[in-house]
Image 1 (cartoon, rainbow, N blue to C red):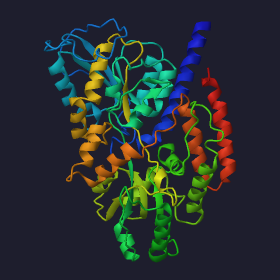
Image 2 (cartoon, one colour):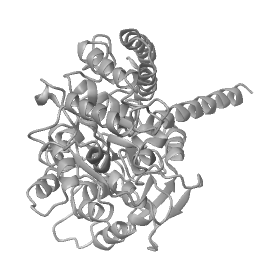
Image 3 (cartoon, rainbow, N blue to C red):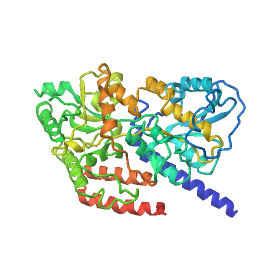
Image 4 (cartoon, rainbow, N blue to C red):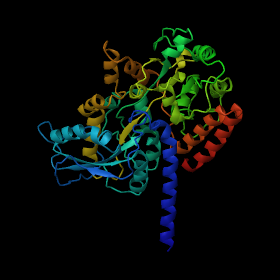
Length: 489
């Protein structure tokens, strides 16, 4: 009976953790109205049932001993071996159920990998929400069923700290790690070890309604990544536009909105753009960090947008994109997927430019970043093949195929440089690639990210609703400090 009670308590605790985690990561997964693969991947709403598959290849599973190797282990077993992993099988668990999501999009990649290596890649596909429950219940209990995990990047530190993931330094040389953009390596590491290579990343732009600006007689200034608008300029243009097109507010037009209003992924870069940090260097402390002068200044500016009617409180994060595509927002900070949102709604009166800087802080711009990474469960019995597969998907041919299929922001320096040096590259992707390589600031690197994110999201929401800024930030410090105690060792 005592064992039964203990197990019930553990299951209840896991379910609570999963609920908090999914709530925390909603901001990085998008609104559900946007392109399926967004900041951290898919915000898809497919059914919660698991979908398992292989690619039709029938092969008997032959696991390796799982012992640690060296940096060459993830390479082919020998130069002469045509199919170095013939007969071996790995299982990849991920999110994105359905033919139009990752399940369908990755089929050509898996088929190509199997053809080249002789290995079999089995897959299990879950909804965004259910993936976190699977990881907590199965990987957290020490199961060896999986060999490759799709990891939402803010969870890397937490999974590593809890022993869910195996370090991958033995499979990726320093030179190979150096092929990723810096923010991807930082976000995929914890306590000096590399746990999770990136599949791709994300970035943000400033989108604007050309028709509303034209109606107000306002011409957008020239702007690029070397000569950005300032937030102060954007605020003034927003106010001037509202005064001309909706002077009494009856049209319900917003001057400036953030696509993921109050969510950590998109809001913290305001403080980062004034030199602020997301968390202390130890991954736990926040006193003197999220309540310092940079945070107070950024949050005060943000609060004033609402107090002065430039931003509207009645629009939630789930509604911002549709409000923009309905022609009711002058300026909106949003992801690269916004172009697809506009196309879906047949909205064409938009333009875009780089995210602004604060006046006097043009050299401190911080932008949102991060998406899906790969990890190897600590108890995987075929780490060699898993690492080889991950390297192929993150640095090899598989990554090239993925970017061609999904059109996400690349996380490798070579792919970023290719975009920046291509005169014919898409303008949106050029801005995103530049930001990813130069201004991207990873979210807080901490084992307690779930709790951190919940507190920070609530704090941004309180501030936009009028709570005294310094009081709100000091309260956040107190709550986060309390939450972090259980993670300190």
